[in-house]
Image (cartoon, rainbow, N blue to C red; front, side):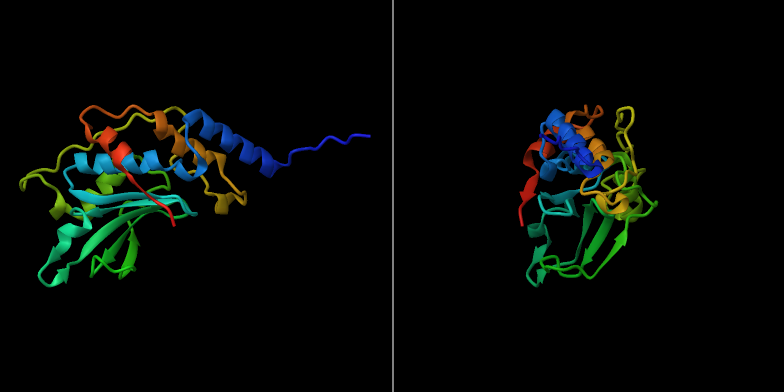
Amino acid sequence: MTIPLIRNTSGHQIDEAERLHRAAGVTYHKAHHAYIAAVAATVEAAGIVIGDIGSDCDEPRGGNFRIGGDLEDFWDDEGYGPSMVIQWREDRGWYHIWFSDSQAALGDYTEDLPGNLPLMATPEQVAGAIQALVPERCQCGGGKPPAVPAWQMPRGYEADPPCPEDDGWDVSPRLERSLTAYAGLRPPEGLPAWLARSQRITVIIR
């Protein structure tokens, strides 16, 4: 006698997430890379110089970039100066880390970005929050900051989906749906850095 196996709810969640990844042409551990690249390109378009753009393949998944340029840009005769890193993590969202020594392994403190951003804030929301956080970094010649390009998100895009810890599952298809939306999303006009950033983003494997 053959007893058919029945897939439980957790299994169905995993199956749905895998379907989303296949359709987007990504894996689970790289599903967030396009999102980080989109945000980084939008922040640059908002007039803010950034560097050291990276996306890790660890869990929880995350990505980051440094305000002001790459690490080497903060070197002087006395060592590495202070800098700020903007970080996204799937279980926390967007926050910034202050380093009094830019080369240090650990920052001095962390704080969420202003504006009470949702977990999957759109790129223009993140860029606007960073403009508010570091207005002195905006390359606008002392005038009004440039307009932030707005992305046209697909229908059903969820800005604040639950992460796996929130809903008790191994994977959250709602989060994966929002992340994979960026894999095939057309960037807004005036965002030439998008393709370059999506191709050059550093993958950090721990």
